[in-house]
Image (cartoon, rainbow, N blue to C red; front, side, top):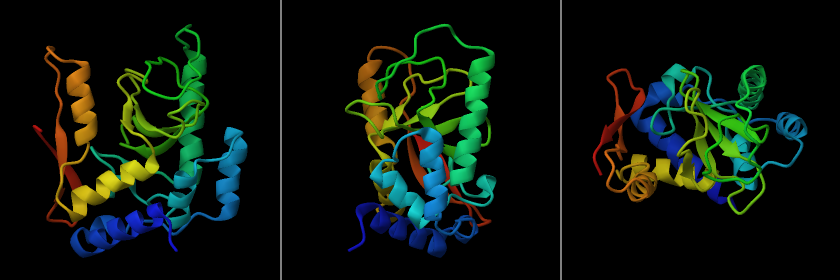
Length: 217
């Protein structure tokens, strides 16, 4: 039987083929076992099962600018691009470290330096990435945003890759707003302060590309 991620990705890809064909056409074929093994060798540990299964369905996209499949506007990265983005972020951190101690537990605690166990899996093409957090701890495998200016700050978006894809599927197939759980956590965390807590709906441009539109929850 197909796994959860396989089923979720099938539904996402099918919706895109029917409704956003320009974005669907950018989806790459599955990554080979050798490519996935190369990522694991570079990271120095196994990938979470859901991330491995996702790359076994599709090795990212060809042209990120045409395939922002992940809310609020990130394109899935291939195995090779994931390693390239990681190497670039580590190089930037090495050239101007914050001087703070590394935080070695996965989760939402603020980190100013890019950690070697952050693995980029999505890009907004502007220097920001969605990363699988492969540090140890109960939130190992969670997905957060590395911001090229703010770092890992209020970063946690989903508990894992499977939850991310379930959120995308619900937005596309069922018409539910994406990132609602994150918006709720953010509202509670910053209660009484003037912060945005948008959720995102899926729209399709006249050119057949998926885009995400923010709205108040």
